[in-house]
Image (cartoon, rainbow over all chains, first blue to last red; front, side, top):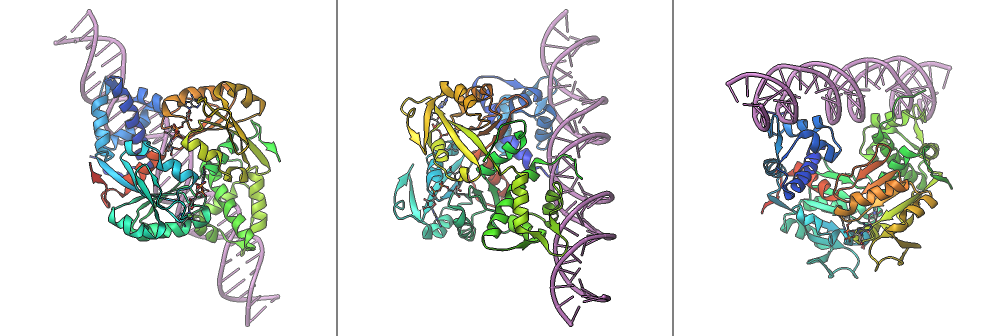
Length: 214
Length: 214
DNA sequence: CGAAGTTCGTGAAATATATCACAGTCCAAA
DNA sequence: TTTGGACTGTGATATATTTCACGAACTTCG
Ligand SMILES: NC(=O)c1ccc[n+]([C@@H]2O[C@H](COP(=O)([O-])OP(=O)(O)OC[C@H]3O[C@@H](n4cnc5c(N)ncnc54)[C@H](O)[C@@H]3O)[C@@H](O)[C@H]2O)c1
Ligand SMILES: NC(=O)c1ccc[n+]([C@@H]2O[C@H](COP(=O)([O-])OP(=O)(O)OC[C@H]3O[C@@H](n4cnc5c(N)ncnc54)[C@H](O)[C@@H]3O)[C@@H](O)[C@H]2O)c1
């Protein structure tokens, strides 16, 4: 039916559609058109239809998409019946906020292991996760079959830790350290460089607005 | 010389190049080729040259880019001589980690105001920033000429707070709440949806790897 | 100095992604 | 049942972004 390559952006948007139809479902809205769904997600109606179109035909001409069905279909497509184990490395300011965040598990993401080098932190427990020394990483990641990781160590440590994670078999890294990580082909990194994102936003409103000369 | 529209992705990468040449400069490397710079940033040599090409000619055929000059040029292009005031709304787990992060100010981003609704938090100080009630937002944002903001309130509150921010004159929102914000044309939102990013990563390694059925 | 070897800058080509636009389908109402 | 209106699904088109590829500029070295 459709064997074209699916853009990564499409997958990412599918999660947004799912979030939206989940909300609609809660308030007993039964049907939604691509244009309404687009409006709610700040996307065009065509974008919505095209994204869904990669995976089949979910809509009904004349009335739109059945919310319940679309929700189920998206959950199926996106593998929402699965749970992902996640390893967290670097339980500092940011790491501990993430570690205590309950939102992940609602999305099937379970932080099942956390690592740090600071002996004052090792052994402490956050949300049922005991912080382990980094030297235990390899064994634990393999043992718990972990393929996702969150990296929130200082920039200077990030590459070393990434290497350890990859060596241990991790396949994805959500990287908060402001460095470009060097990783093999089969490993996916998503950089979450907050400063950079803010600065990029600022760039596009500069001139119109009010950055101050130092 | 060049009046084509510059891709946002290019701007974002420029910050990466700048980070890299800053490091090179520190260790007294004087010259770097586009292919070396690309290697360090996980980009192609052509990409590097094209990105820089939007802003002029910085390179020297046969030897590459002079690190010091490139650094200065990038700083100029990216407005690194400016400082941006940032407002932070929602000083919870995530917000307080961000508030205490020293990395922002190293990039010319100063969190100069923080807001919350929780009376137990109002009045407390983090890194010289006193947490204020949300009702003071409008006045303070206008008074301090703030155009950037970080939104880390619960999802259900996010749209309301965004409206307040926009009404107060903020032009950019770095949004950590997992909701699609509705904003006017002239306001830029960057979603930082951590769960979604992790799930999207997971999607692309699924099959090859080990999500567990619930 | 001249030749060999690098590397840039940049149009042109290739890819990737988003939008358009409309035939075809379905619904609802009379 | 028929008609009008509301929508989808999807090729075709447009736009955006990246990669290619090569002439020209520059460096180095014998
Ligand atoms: N805190 C923020 O709000 C924020 C914002 C943007 C980016 N970041 C980035 O996120 C990363 C973490 O920031 P943070 O503020 O949480 O820093 P932090 O110093 O509070 O925490 C870092 C943690 O990593 C641990 N660590 C250091 N080396 C390690 C290693 N080799 N293996 C395992 N653990 C190690 C430290 O013991 C510490 O607990 C940094 O790269 C920072 O630039 C943080
Ligand atoms: N904590 C994390 O690691 C994490 C990870 C991913 C996403 N997020 C998202 O970031 C947001 C914040 O998460 P958190 O864990 O820090 O939550 P939190 O509950 O710890 O903090 C939220 C803060 O916002 C304040 N608040 C609530 N309503 C407000 C309003 N109308 N105006 C001003 N302040 C208000 C609360 O008093 C609280 O201090 C949420 O949307 C969450 O989904 C958090």
